[in-house]
Amino acid sequence: MAATARPLLDELLRKASTEIDAVRRRAEDEAARVRQAARAEVERRAAEGRQRHERAAAEALAIARADAQRRANERLLPARAEALDRVFALAAGAIEARARHPRLPDALTPLVKSAVEYLPADAVRARCAPALVPPVRRALKAAGADGAQVRADESVPLGAILESDDGAITVDATFNRRLTRDRAVLAAEIAPLLLGDAGL
Image 1 (cartoon, rainbow, N blue to C red):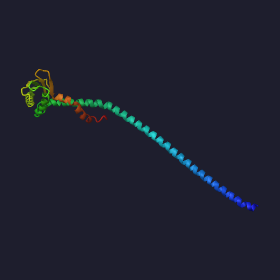
Image 2 (image 1 turned 30 degrees about the vertical axis):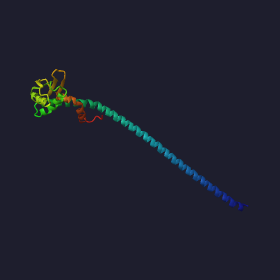
Image 3 (image 1 turned 120 degrees about the horizontal axis):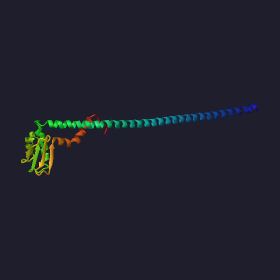
Image 4 (image 1 turned 45 degrees about the horizontal axis):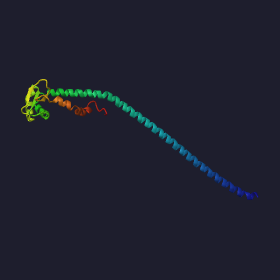
């Protein structure tokens, strides 16, 4: 009886061992999957943490840069405006210093012609510095205002003041007026060269 039961017992033990091995392998596989999932979750959370840190750092850097730019502009813009004022003051002085420049009549002619367009050509009078009376007369003639009266006036800056005979229309044809008129355009070109770019 015992000899007959032995093979059956051995078979049961083998089956039990096989089942135990299968259960162990499944448990090990499940444990591996759990460990892998846990590592993945840890890495995901670490990545999210790094991303949050990087976003926070980027936002802090952007705020710091904007604040630095604002403070720089607060110092730079007034200094640039002052520098522009000096540039245009020097330009105005340089214009007056060219009163006897040999090419002054060439530069004066287009100013006078432009001014005459706003006046009746046969009823124009002009005022200018005494030294400019001859070139102003020539410029008026070139503009078609041959009969215009030209009067010397020391108070007129470099250029001329043109008026209609009845005094109803006055046109400033001085170089200072041209400089003032073109200041906005010139300032936009000059400003980036003064104290750098404000980032505007």
